[in-house]
Image (cartoon, rainbow, N blue to C red; front, side, top):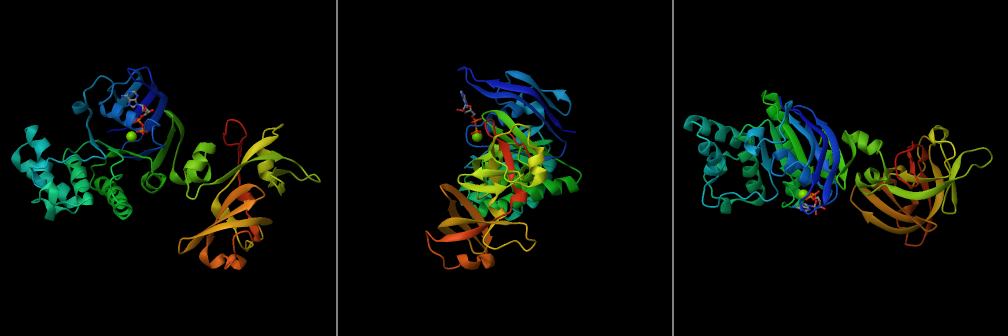
Length: 374
Ligand SMILES: Nc1ncnc2c1ncn2[C@@H]1O[C@H](COP(=O)(O)OP(=O)(O)O)[C@@H](O)[C@H]1O
Ligand SMILES: [Mg+2]
């Protein structure tokens, strides 16, 4: 059993800098949890405190129900994989995998069995006889993961393990690692994983749940879908999703009894159910709309509102096009399937077009503190 429980965890570095501000978090036994956030938000600090590589200056950390604040790393039942997977250059892959176990006095037959099992899980049996210099970046990273697997830890900690790989390899390693987590679960050896990344795509595709951090404070902990559909604040809304959610300040204004808002010079009606959820007295909000809720054609169900915008640029991705346009002075990005460009096909910069806003899908945030209103 290796659930983790972080209670009011704080970190103040010896120089007085407070990097972590009272983090409360439960990671379930066998869960794949991702910590995501921009550089400097204290992902590594938190992970290193869990690993025991960094002291905890406030709060309590439990692993499997036991308070481990004072336990050295070796006694925490964890294995960590870093971005820089420093393998021993003078040892073959087999020895790299076996080294830690041998050092711990594990019987030879068991070392061999564990090394071969890890190699099989990571499809690298053919690499066991090679030296690290004979490996590609992706292969070396697999060996680094293998070194963690042979330890049979209850908790795996990954700190940006794929950052050094090119985009294509990163994509295949993502699948390999999530697959590995499921295989271990199927084999009756479930491992709790905490995976740190600054890459929201990695977070969204790998995490069963995601913990979004900003400046040492948790912003939201949720499933990928819930984070995407119901971001708790403007920070999460703009951090998750690519292209980013369009977010602009807006003033509430009813017209002829209909709730609505002014976006620059443009008045847009607000869906009644959303307007009803706004705290009474709200005057200003931050209005958010994901790029896929902006189109070039009317929605088949009639649930969109056409607004004239000025075309800036179009980025062709193959199956879809990111259309950048302006509503008055406000920039917007629409994400349009390539076969639904309509009159935008062949349009030029500066042309005026009708863009279809799917307002039922809009997000409204507090004008000042950015928290989700509805
Ligand atoms: N040893 C240290 N002493 C003082 N400040 C540190 C130390 N290590 C990291 N920090 C600071 O703590 C914050 C979090 O760092 P880190 O955990 O490495 O962030 P991340 O991994 O999310 O990029 C940063 O502002 C960083 O400068
Ligand atoms: Mg880091």
